[in-house]
Image 1 (cartoon, rainbow, N blue to C red):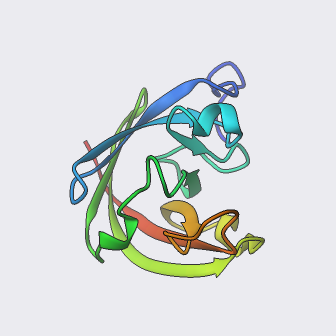
Image 2: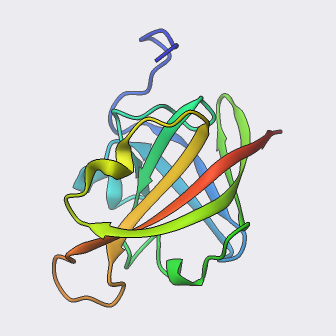
Length: 142
């Protein structure tokens, strides 16, 4: 990570906003993926880079709160993440459904990538066995 430790957010800090235009949603993003953060919004996986940086920035959210209607997303949809570092415009390039314990979702990438993850199936009762993954590539900085 190419930021000084004083700039890196602490667990629980609000680090930005994720806008999903197709779903008409504006979702706050918090540092960390524990219950305390996911109750308030989406959570940034702490071992991944921050949005806008080269590599894979991973953000997770609950299927029954912030990431409802994820099944309506389409390839080429625009996602915008706004942080103190700027506004980052991503386009969805791929969808995946993986096992809940699949760690290939959090692997490094060559390009600036935004990976969103939520539980799947969407209407499953209890702890869902799968994850619905949205992969988007950075297209512009505003």
